[in-house]
Image 1 (cartoon, rainbow, N blue to C red):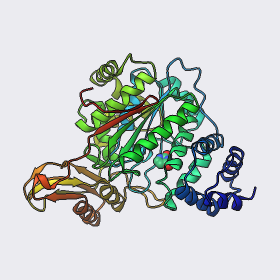
Image 2 (cartoon, rainbow, N blue to C red; image 1 turned 135 degrees about the vertical axis):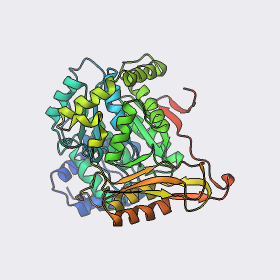
Image 3 (tube, rainbow, N blue to C red; image 1 turned 180 degrees about the vertical axis):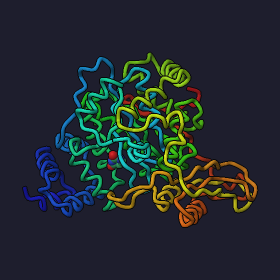
Length: 448
Ligand code: URA
């Protein structure tokens, strides 16, 4: 196949056929198409787009470039959740054991932090010994035993997407609705799911900050799920500030454990319960969202969800004692309070700047091959709208040394914006603003 001709056609606004997408992505996964040609095609797609049929064909081509999980023999529904990426977003760590403890199998396939966003795999690997690189066979066995497995996208699953996503990250072609939709859905559909819940982030820290683009992404992924008989529900949630207080790897695991033990921060719990409710309904383990909420609260109050997390950690080689004693997680050697430089109102806690700050501390990646320091990060207690006085503590910086503390302070100087007056601060986005299903878009009612 003449790849140059395909790039040229797409660049000029033309379309590729289903067969061309299939051969192209198979050859790319096999290393027969060079990265420079795929990068040029990704940039052409970024500008020209793909029509609805092409998005489906690209999704199928990436899905079929690898293997799938076989979970049909499980007696319960199989539902996963995927977030489009954010800062402080440790929802997967809470949700996977919580939903599994309520009777739905959760093959939780996650990614690594790239750019300013954190990744669930890096967080899990902050637990001493935890293995995320498990094979499809091991994941299937874990799902039979614990109803949950927490895995990364190995070279077996949608390998064409795996390569293309790393390439897009390096070539500034992530922020494309067709490419994001095909990327997410190709690997999710490989999990053999009976349902999928999406957390589509909006706001300055999201890959697609604008509401209309988030809604379009959600609708595109819902349509791709429908092509494969997999019902998809999407919630649009705020990423104009970090979720919860902890931002970093080990420190987010600690916050997730506190959530499973019933003392998680309110915003983290609200997003977790909202996504979990749809997972339980889609998985057939709850009559409706209210019933689902009651079941999740009971799983936390009884300790079942925390115990299941412990069992999963043990089964995947990690130290299960961290659930009872989070002090066993890696601890930062240097810590300092970050205090308000002056009195005022917290106008913004900007997630991109926080995410870049974590990277500056050594807790994130600028290249895929970078190693991360699990213990570094921030605990940010300041929330938009808080009125503070000069010298009040707004955050704790967790670093490896004095240089790290300085870098952390510089990052928070940029991230935490103070206004003189409450009226000078833009109101934060609603934590959850919309719910999107195959039937359409609903505005979120906070009372549910
Ligand atoms: N997450 C993915 O898996 N793929 C994308 O393209 C963006 C976010």
